[in-house]
Image (cartoon, rainbow, N blue to C red):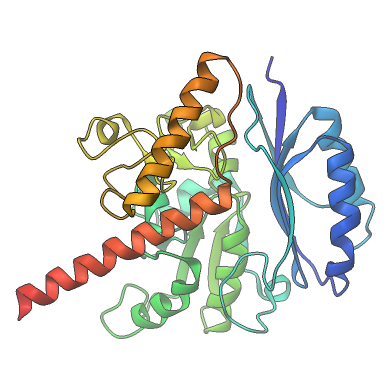
Amino acid sequence: MSTYLIAALYKFVELPDFAQMRDPLFAFCEQHEVKGTLLLAREGINGTIAGPQEGIRAVLAYLNSDPRIAGLVHKESYADKAPFYRLKVKLKKEIVTLGVPDLKTAEMVGEYVAPEDWNALISDPDVVVVDTRNDYEVGIGTFNRAINPKTQSFTEFPQWVAEQSKEGGVLHGKPRVAMFCTGGIRCEKSTAFMRSQGFDQVYHLQGGILKYLEDIPAAESLWDGDCFVFDERVSVRHGLEPGDYDFCRACRMPINEAEKASPQFEEGVSCPYCHGHSSPEQVERFRERQKQVALAREREERHIGVSMDELTERREAARRKAEEQRLLAQQGKDA
């Protein structure tokens, strides 16, 4: 039987006192042996936490005891080993960063579409289907017919919408748009943004990809590939079973067996996405860390290593550097 219960949650709601909520929430999670990351902002709460079932249930009850957060919807899954090693409760300007000031997400959100109705919607040729996730997430799995905006971060999405709304763009003259993301939170904000830009018939997958994979049998599915998740499972498939991907421990990119067979892959040090982007000092540090990980494995101990945040920052830095090198190479060809 799986030991750890994982709960992914969010709610857009006005929380003017969000800063004062942090310390009591942190203490309550810590008391109940719950790990993971929770974000608090004026616009609401977002996060993924894991721990013993009793602890997670207690934290969810604690959050729901606030009348403003009552009715909080969350998604559950289980894991045999701890998906998080630390607890963080962070204060943010936005619970998911789009960079559009004063967007009233709770008031402007698009129309929810249940997983059982999603296939019919995205099969309609008059509907534009947009994957609102980042490019590296889309790369390991997405829905049939879905357009990949190829964004490196969510803050690039408004610019993509502006460009594609012009004549010749995929959104030009297309009033019906269906959007999806991992758990639903990006879609809440992206559909609200689309409506603020004059798109009236905007839909999004209720509960996100995770709810679809949980509810829709593989035989009836229009999903192709794995779904990236931001914890140690890396990816999941139908039924939320663990997928076929691992993390590069240097840059946090999802990698498959073929990428691990690359000469640019060195466990804990580099992969085809980040090879050559680390300084000699960083490479030496990564190798030393990997040595400690290997020793811990031999002793059947858990080695925590670096934090999820640090690895995420490395992944984005590696992707930015790779994009800069690609643009420089292209400029050289065009010269």
